[in-house]
Amino acid sequence: LQQEFPDHAPSVRRAVALARCARDPLAMACALLSEKECALSLKLHTLQDVLPQDRRLELLERVACSLVNQVGVDVNQLLASLWKRPLVQFVNGLGPRKALRFLAGLQHCGIQYNRIASRMHLVQELVDIQQELGSKVMMKAIASFVVTDDDNYAPVNVIGRSQVGQLIASS
Image 1 (tube, rainbow, N blue to C red):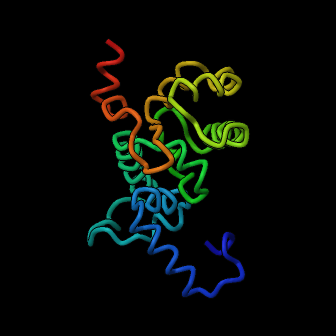
Image 2: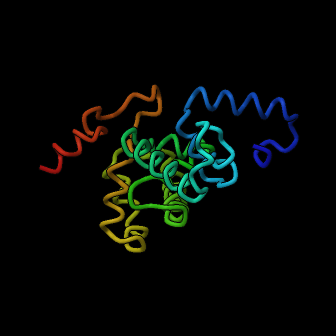
């Protein structure tokens, strides 16, 4: 937040952080996990210091990946809100480096269209990235993205956004 609001008082930055956490706690947790020192400084259990730091970080990242992929990541909200972008590195098949490349391609689509209309639209627009990342990685990642309507954040296809809907669509 200091980079995003350098001219504001620390109390204002804390208020923004609290509001963002109330609005999307998973995005804020992923933002903390993307900074290793912040993630390791969280006090989650009295016995957490028994685990080595690398193992604790691995477990936190595993939980984040599981939650992000179960909940899904809204593509149009990623385009509108920079602070939600740390979610992408926890999407299936991506990591920090592939997430940066994916976000660059997504930003290009957003500049061109202002929003993504459907998951198929996303696949069609990210053909260049698909060639870089590989089709299997890209298809795994695309399954975790959700496309919502900008006006009221209502899902365009409620069943299609869930894991059950994805299983139905693949059969």
